[in-house]
Amino acid sequence: MEVVIAALLGLILGHLMDLAFQRFYTGEQLRAPLYRCTSCRFPLRAVFALPVVGYLAHRGRCPDCGDRLPIHAVLLPLGGAALFVASVLVFDDFIGGCLGGFFATVFLTLTFTDIDERLLPNRIVYPSILIAIAVSWAWPDSSVVDVLAGGLVAIGIAASLLILSLPFGAGAFGLGDVKMIVLIGFVVGLPSVVVGVVIGTLAAAVFSGVMIISRMMSRKDAIPHGPFLALGAVVAMFWGQGIWDGYWDR
Image: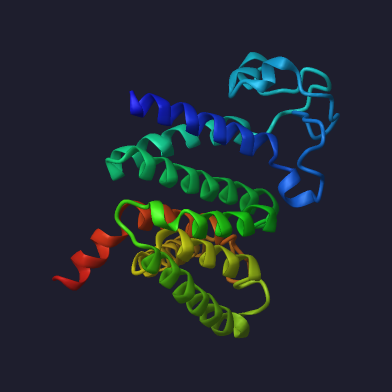
């Protein structure tokens, strides 16, 4: 029963993130009337108030202007449901699992904003940091000290990476990536933040290497780091302590 509830919570949260998606980075008021299509901005139809249903019913197109709707209209709700279920199973604790599912869905949303707009919006990152600090006591396997220490270490890591990236140009590592790492630190705590940043950085490096070798991009092309940091964050949140202990106990 807990798994079903978790799936429904993730589905709803992912859907809400999708409905507010453009407002995270355009400055539009969050409390403004809802709409589904960014082209015609026609008021939200009842069928689109349900996760995924409206998208499938109209075959991924706006029923008013015919423009194609963004694929994250499906991927955010379904991804949120999957992440909530995975989190509840990993933590084996409903409250901790829901916390993990919430932040994993936040990281999924940031993945799409970075892919679509090359932005990691303050409207998502800053409130999420405050929420992470506020609920730091509720994690089943971490203490408040671990979480706060993770945030402080993350600030140091992010500042160091920003300085090291300066010779490679302004697009190599941005302030959005700095804020993302700080968010990861306050979510996963210490030592998992180190695991998350290392995994995210290595994943970005491997992806870039493959793309350059295959000549699908050049060394001058910038790639969004947000999706890779988000991947590292979720892995660290679910298995960071185990990975850390396994590495040092070898």
